[in-house]
Image (cartoon, rainbow, N blue to C red; front, side):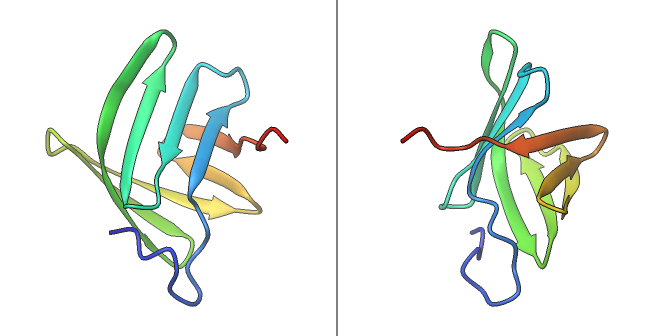
Length: 88
């Protein structure tokens, strides 16, 4: 579970997108993520946990990765993702 509600943990739930829009990573409130790459939907899926501003990912295949929120930007391994603003 994401534990996003714990005091001190970053609010990461929502859609995160690279500047060119090629990679879209949805971090869901249930602690699951779904990452699309280009036209490939659900290219990577799995679970994540948040500790402070750090994110640990475990892909459904067992692959692991990490990320950090710095100044409202998600730095996920070599990727830089920005929170997508919700349309009103």
